[in-house]
Length: 204
Image (tube, rainbow, N blue to C red; front, side, top):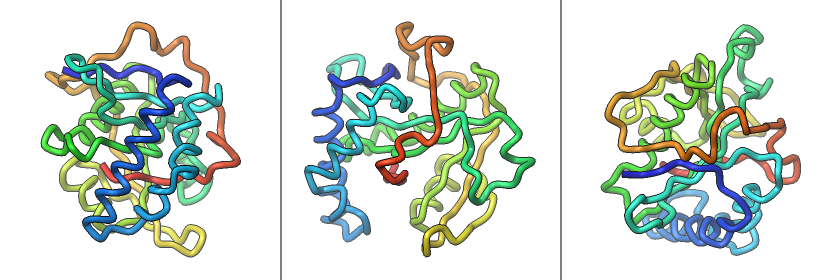
């Protein structure tokens, strides 16, 4: 069983280590992006979003060993690039900066994070969960394993970027609880999440 809770300053060291572990795994497997994320300063700059007071970072915690299994950021504001005005008008949560512990791949923690987000969105009055990525392999994973629909692809800063979405829903039997300390009415979001740190999309 896992617990999702809001991450904070105390989680930054563990989140930094998790990003670098994922980056090392990517490098070993010849995947793009690992060299950047493996750098200590870069990894910590992403992790420190949990401490900036504005970014909604959620941590997936193993209920047994209390270890950090992964984390993701959520925003209630759909970016204006790539999405139509009609799409942006529909209430949604946007998944970004998702990282998971590569040693827990068999537990499908990336999918658990995404599926929890579907339920969290539904419980907080949103209709959709959206995400984006620049990796075709990652797009196929989100589409085929997590059942997100590919809405379209766009050119974003010179890179082909895939936009994906799935309708919000509470998935029965999901082994992930939400911490009572992270009740939805206590959350405050702002967009952009952090103007200093470019929004990136990590592997599931």
